[in-house]
Picture: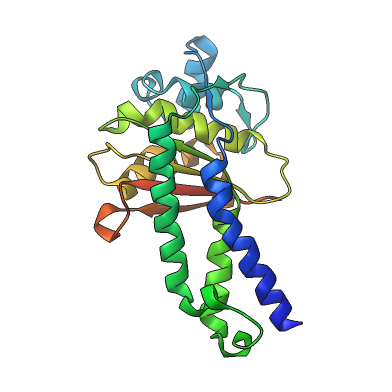
Length: 230
């Protein structure tokens, strides 16, 4: 049974290569919303008017949120379809993620009936845990721009679609590549996503983030956000 379970886990994780590259997923945008009601919500959240004016999607999500969830439909519309170049960039990123995944349990890639009992259980557990997070990714996107303002529209549209389905039972995630971003991706995620989400009261303890830096071997800056199901 143990061997069969490990083989099944391996099969599921291998599918991630196909799943992430072929999935265009939930890619959304929205129109700018400014009004008196929004200003009241902004003051309540502790976010500046200027910050939200430059990030209209975030403003719309805030206006539609209540009790830690996006309760009303933010009426987001689809982004442009991914280009061939963007699909190639995502493919490079997935290759990197697969390589990093196998580092957690190198023998897992050669798992069969003969060596199943030789796999280190602790390392294999980390391999499975990370693999499941990657498999939860349902949307992958390329955000173009050199700074936080430039990538904000694409990033927040992807994030908005992830957060809106607040009744989801299973973990769900997004993968965002930022090939032309010049700043530190970890700082971007902390300052431009996690802190504002905390101020909005969204996500709470249900958001798990992983940042991928060029200095650590990634082909370009990127990040993953997984939203834990109920």
